[in-house]
Length: 169
Image (cartoon, rainbow, N blue to C red; front, top):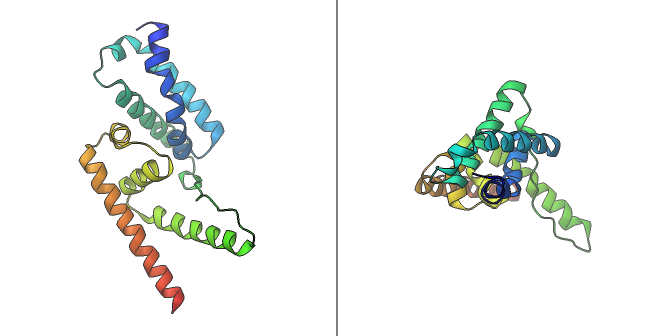
């Protein structure tokens, strides 16, 4: 694989990797450094990558594994990963406050999900990855990713209903 092929097939995926890497590592600076390291690893193994049947899957799983290795080495705080619901601009501050409260509740619910469900729901609903990309990154079958996502969404729905029915009295 030459430089041009690497740029087209591998390096072009770095923008798609960024949300996942940033979320796992908990910050933009860490994510930028990690992506550079990942691309360097992949460049060194470019001859093997050229023969791989699923280059995109290899890149995503390499990125995920690299992030997990970094967390194990540095013991970074993974609970600090930030995600926000889009807050709708409104005339009164009450709606914005309600959106912030909802975001806090959803963040707690998502944090309480089992690890695989949490990872899949964040990658799909917040980062916007396709099922095939999630499957490649998590090294799961697409059908399993769909099941995990369905269960996670169901759990979030049930927990939200419990929270709001409790608040209503």
